[in-house]
Length: 328
Ligand SMILES: [Fe+2]
View 1: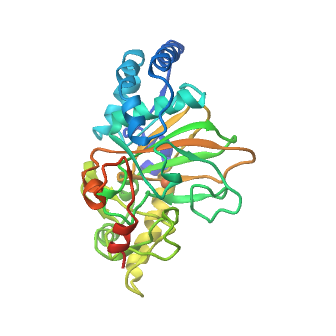
View 2: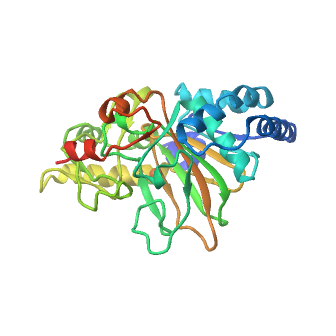
């Protein structure tokens, strides 16, 4: 019998939802020109996150004039026509990269961060650190498949994760799997089980809560095809009830399906990847030898919920006391 999974690669299966864009030499030259002109007039990169957003916002229209295809791709991700977009051929210089990353992040939504994560910086610097715990963004080992900040309610999580490569050891790949592709592989009874309040999710270690803060029982999957909500740290999720073997099997089968559908991208210098944090899961291979630096931002359509639970304007939010309130 004809089988899609036996005849197509993960890249081909996901091509409807994931776009790859290689900028032409003309686009690259135009982007470089508008960056230089912007930086001449806009002054130094501000130290404060709120000012950084205001500083980069006028650059969006300049970027659109230089590379309309790039800006349109970001809008397609925001609108949900795509779940991910990978772009090659952007500037490799860190200062220029931070500007383009912020502009893309502003097109996708409102950039933000949590104060306890990566020093509370809006433009986070992801670098490996010796002796890091497993499944954190500083480990050199494999970072297994997951969605970010899954223990938090949807409105407190990031909608888009935006990554910009500066230095990447050869072969170190970041992969993304569309939830719709993975879920279509699963038995209906397991999909139903994933939609029930049968799972406890551990809060991220990067929030500094320690290793054992777990959410109340929650579903892993919600929503329909066009608006799937996946919250799934594969290494930090367990059945809420001891002996719930069906929930355990659902976790295992979902992990396998996501790994099968994961499409790899190299975050080499000048490469950018954005993806939807609810409609798919991501992972990173072990980091090869040598340095690595990836710049990251979070973007969400609205910061209303974060503003209401913290009584802070943002874009940097302290959510520790809220998280302590909702944990089990
Ligand atoms: Fe992540």
